[in-house]
Amino acid sequence: MNDKQSKQRIIVTIANRSYTLYVERDKLVEQEPLARRAAELINRRAGQYEVHFESCERLDLQDLLSMAAWDIAYDYLRLKASNDAGLMAEEIRRIDAELERYLQQTGTSPDDAV
Image 1: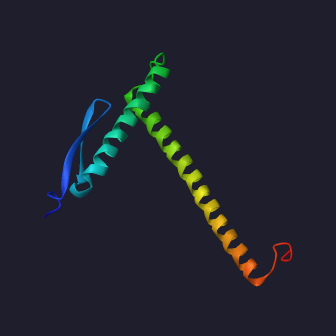
Image 2 (image 1 turned 90 degrees about the horizontal axis):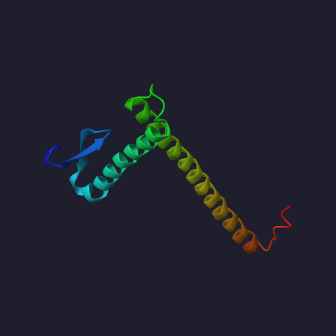
Image 3 (image 1 turned 60 degrees about the vertical axis):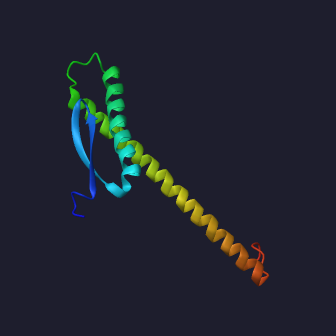
């Protein structure tokens, strides 16, 4: 199968514009809903900013989309940082348990090691 045949075309709408995206056919069930939810998220955030700043005449659609993009990127980075901290804490717990097992095997108590 060539590259075009291995992908499925889907259309999402962002800010009243249609965009054609291609997703892997074998991952269509997973990727299509994510692509559509991402477009909905952008539209919803831009709409929230539009309502919030409706009295500001200087803002246009590009401003609203830019604010929505920044907001989503900020949330993503904040969640990524907290997830990384969670992974680090999990690794520390694993190392601590391994150290505890070692100390028990050698007959050393944690207080003796200090």
